[in-house]
Length: 173
Image (cartoon, rainbow, N blue to C red; front, side, top):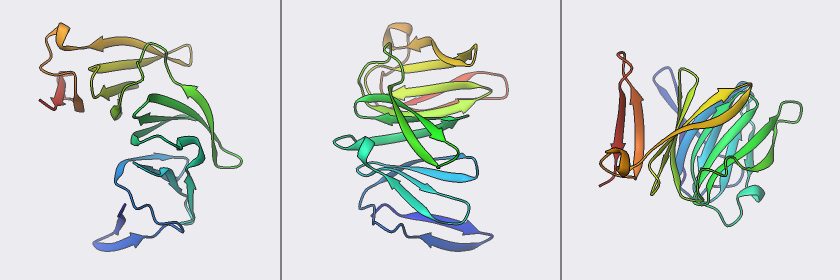
């Protein structure tokens, strides 16, 4: 039922949005003191520092949301139609849709988003792993890894960079 739980010390506190999510919660990120959640069937839920919840669902009508990542004033959201980018309006606390993030990333399911050392890793269901880096304050696609490059599967579920800077991929299949 789209449960969100906050542990305060060792005490669990159930967070109940005004409108029940009735959907899997797929990802969590933080920006400007607010916590943002990817709700698969409902869009994006924001919980501000006072505990007030706001559900952004209009921009995600007819989409499934799988992942979410804050990057400065931008919010990257992985959907079944590809990677979308939103501007976080600091004054109003709202999301402004800027559309598809990159034409080079196909309209495929974006299952995983992670940022490590300024590099953003984008795991997709069918197209492998995409690597994004900031160049002149703009995100640029710098690399894509697929089975053609020797990875086991194009269905990337998680990524880790270890202390020796090795890239570890978890895939389905």
